[in-house]
Length: 155
Image (tube, rainbow, N blue to C red; front, top):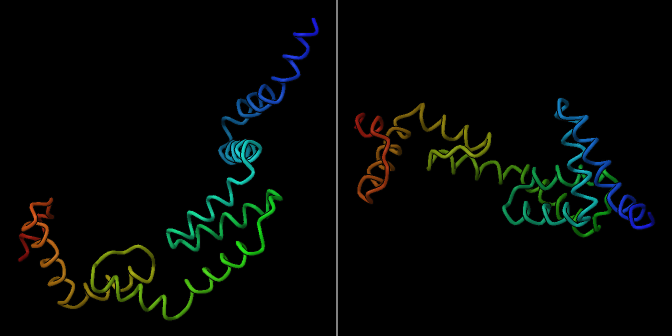
């Protein structure tokens, strides 16, 4: 009987989590919150690790959203990491960074964010966008890679 009580006490948190997730299966927001809470109970450094990965990928918005999640879940984040995220967010919204993203979109035609999308559209409004696309697809064709035949046909 003592073994059964000990086993029940050890398994109670998992059973409680499973019941809560089953009860929330039709509520996506509640289900996501329960899964996040469960993941944080298993590994408290999970948010810090994801912030580090976002900063390494130069994704300041994602790092900032993880920082906000940490505040919401009362997870302690080091002051140094918080400062790095705030600095990355400030740099990402700086004029020089936006201009660089605009120029990248203009030259490459790759739209990764709003600034690069604006550059891509600006290039497409002028003949430069067509020349850029034909050169890019010509390179893909010469390298034996998949090409966009619609762009190639325009040339």
